Image (cartoon, rainbow, N blue to C red; front, top):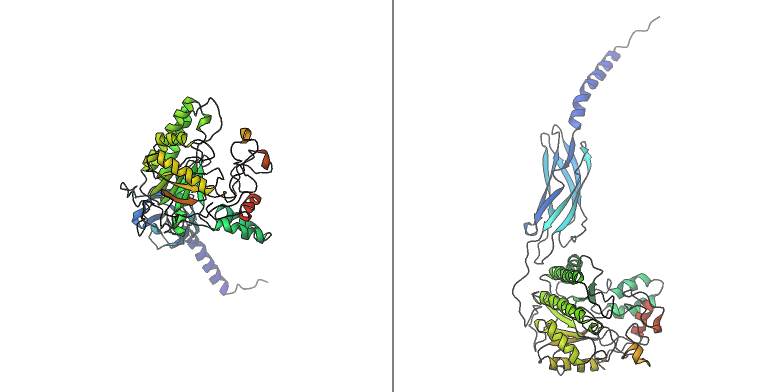
Length: 473
């Protein structure tokens, strides 16, 4: 016996059939793709914001896609652009929409910088390439052509007595300096050592750049931008060590290396741009010249002269070139080299960068150089490790007048300052150019346990702190 078909069943079947017939239309409305209009966008820094365009292939229904602008290999969030994320909504009939990325304008001369733009979370469309793009921020600032020789750092009030550093406040980054980073790393397991390292970390550090920086413009620009963001009124201290000093004797840098050296300083100077800096140029530039052949000396002078000429044109940089130490060569020999490389184009010279000679003796050495150079140059003295004076070896023929590399028993010297007694004419300041705690390598038998050159050596740094003597002696 057959059962009668319920009257509600045909109605249900009809509704199901109607739904099936509508599915293609619904699928078409929910289909299509969405993407960025290009894989490359460009904005001028002064525009204030960048406009990013998103397109979809089907505008028959509503849709949405999310975006994020968070990361950059070169630009600094909060300083060059504002991180942003959000959602782009499409109305029926709309196939193109935009969102904006806030761009921060400043007066700094920078390279062009790239920011990554990303789409994600599309609905109901399908996300296709390009779903990521680069936004290039084009710098619109130029290096100033005018320089106030009496006040290159634009200090207020202007500095007196011909010292452009007088009254300046120097940049200090206690948590991110060489000593500060180590202090942070060991503060839990060795709080006493971490506290001692703060003695170094809380003083202005001379940030060093050299041959290890393959892209010097980017490296110095990034550092100076970060310093400016953290403390806009402070003056960063910089030091360079670009010469490689690989060989000694009857040798000279090749013409190719000379050209590479010049390119490096062109880029380095471009990275400084309009920033206010104090620069201790090229540690060991002149003190190693007796090791060179006649051709080698000529090429060294060519290299140093070129760099000084480039750096002297920076509008807000106070530049000093390394003049060795009173423990190294005769003042007349160094004065002759200083004149040949163009010390008169910059503020002057610095001494004691790789030695621990007493501060008072280095001041006498500096005054002698000034007299031999006609009284014009100014100078500064490195005091990062001379609180106990030099370690004089028994065998001076073998080791020279002092043990320079990680000499044991040394201590920090006078703290960095440009507030020096007026009786020291032409002395602009005392600074820790040598970065206390940075190893000088295994160059003498006294410290066979020393780490490689440039590595921060905790034991040595603590020794410098414990033996510190901040008096001018």
